[in-house]
Image 1: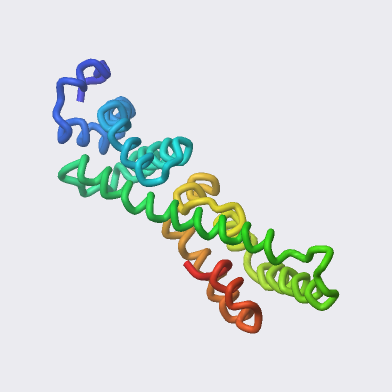
Image 2 (image 1 turned 60 degrees about the vertical axis):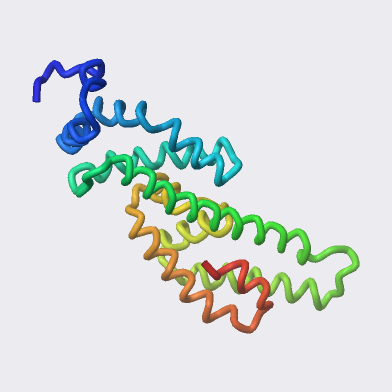
Length: 199
């Protein structure tokens, strides 16, 4: 490939040619694909999430992953790949947002208020203490992944980018934490159990 390749010349190439340039490590190829598809991808993401910020972040994460996986890509149609990957990212993001919102609702509704009995307050504090105690049994990275996912409502791609982990690694850490908490929280509120640890 010519060393003096310019973005303007890439505009004349079809997707397959640009994708080949991308797999060869050409950053201009990534920029060209972004320019071709970002708006269509953004529209889909916004339509599903109703959040311009989330939609923009999902699309950006998608292209970050495309670049990171460029050497192992086995893609014939880049448009199919991008929209397919976006679909799963949207599902994951919405799921994480629902879990986060439900946990916040739980805290607001069930957190000890002035009219709560001493027993209620003790039960609530005991529950939070148990969660923290069990999390501390896990490796630091697993704790961090779980807190980012369940307490901050971050998506798997967000966590991957923030912690420089693969999606598979993030899923592994989440699975490890959830397995422990599912066992240890069985004696507590079933509603909390669902909000906290069901994926």
